[in-house]
Length: 108
Image (cartoon, rainbow, N blue to C red; front, side):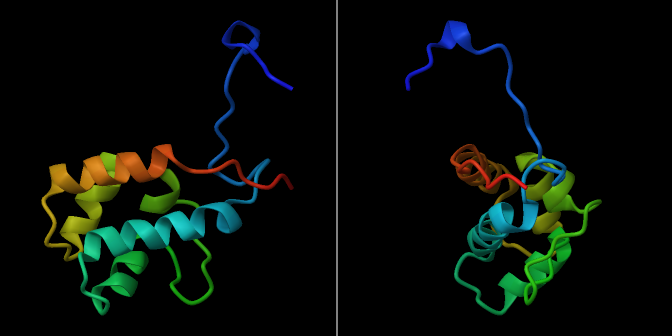
């Protein structure tokens, strides 16, 4: 089934987990964001996940965290403040690309 742009009445963004499963869909994205920000420093990656609000072991993300509530620029600034050596502007561009490619999540 193909839908034309004129048939789309609106878009629903549900990053808070009300309709879509947040941890199952966003944990891999958060991990990739931390990997990008760590720039090869594997020791730093889990620290950046924690700074972003995600438990690196369980994959659960706090609802009020940077990853759950922040946009690409806010996440980039937070990860740099937490120890990333990547330039904030460069990281923002990389995170924008990552976040714009997020697949549709499984429904509850």
